[in-house]
Amino acid sequence: MAATIGIRREDKNEWERRAPVIPADAAELQAMHGLRIMVQSSSIRVYRDEEYRSAGVTVSEDLSPASVILAIKEIPSALLMPGRTYAFFAHVAKGQAHNMPMLRRLLELGCSLVDFEKITDDNNRRLIFFGRHAGYAGMVETLRCLGQRLAASGVRTPFAQVRHAYAYRDFDAAKGHLSELGKQILRVGLPQGLRPLVIGFAGYGNVSRGAQEVLDALRVREIAVRELAVEAGMATEWGDIFKVVFREEDTVRLPDSTGPFDLQDFYRNPELYHSGFEAHLPFLDVLVNAIYWEERYPRLVTRDWARRNYVPGAQPRLKVIGDISCDIRGSIELTVKTTKPDNPYFVYDPETDTASDGVFGTGPAVVAIDNLPCEFPRESSQYFSSVLRSIVRDLAAADWHADFDHLNLPSHLKRAVIVHRGELMPSYGYLQRYLDLRPHSADAS
Image (cartoon, rainbow, N blue to C red; front, side, top):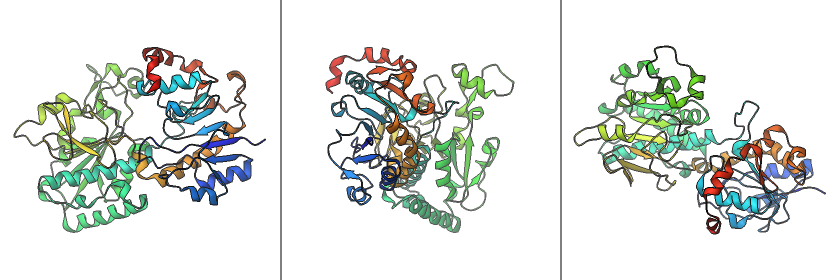
């Protein structure tokens, strides 16, 4: 009998319109691999119910016939069903307190959990990520914030015409609009006090590459970090926009060391390193943060730095921080909260350590949207579905009644099984201490 795969509707918030499997791929899985796909009805999903029905896919409110259920975001504890295998971005691997009730409920119900975030190759590199799409939307929103912030101070620029990422028909439309704005900047120039406009990128992975692809539509000039202090102070050709990309060796330093930077040593011992990033901040108008960060790592921008520099009468150059990584109090310590697409930025007040929504205020404006890929839902869904097709086949073919040692999954998927038949797997046994910290009464929330 063909396995039944359920696709849950996303309802974490009104902005989550993505789908893990798009209609065309669902139809192919059914036709070529003998699977039965059921899609839960949704009024906000970017692919409408009718598109699934037209592809021959069942649309149903009830997913109870499905043995494997796919989603993108976390599933509320009250909606979990006994004995099912769930696959989604669980956000539990760091012991995230807000998701421990969900994890405990999965254990109580004898479920299995495959965390998309933990699907990795033999070198522990993630195989599923929305990083590039987060970069796309994050850069659009950062440029829009810059335009609004400048306009609030009386400086009119073409950046004021940038729309929210979700307001564009699709990503190509957003890039096309930015390309036109780039031509306008080349034609009429930026105001004298903004030339050159310097935009820095912390990080060089998928998130950063996505953000840079958007910025490059404006026809920018890239400079090296070593050129920053010189070039950032020069008004060069009309309308120049510079970008600079920072790597680890540009952001941290090892005290009392004059030798060459050792990247692997930094990865092994980040707590031994100090941040050296503050030296670059006086030369940046915009900072785009696209790095992976944990508590062990030094910060890029600290509250102390902001308090020293954003004082009455001072006019620091840094106007906007696009915190695409969006870790609360993380590498950007000024990120005191997350934001939503319809209210995407706030201004940080270094004196009170608080945030005021909008673009008015003393400190830098911060873009801190915690679910950026949802702003380009069709492209994000198409990408995810293309990656997920083979994974769905493997999940459907596995015997989830077998014990873990005999669970017939490829190694990259087996590494991502956090819970199997109601038990934490050995690689994730450390999560028990986070579960023990949460009272059982929290499960009712």
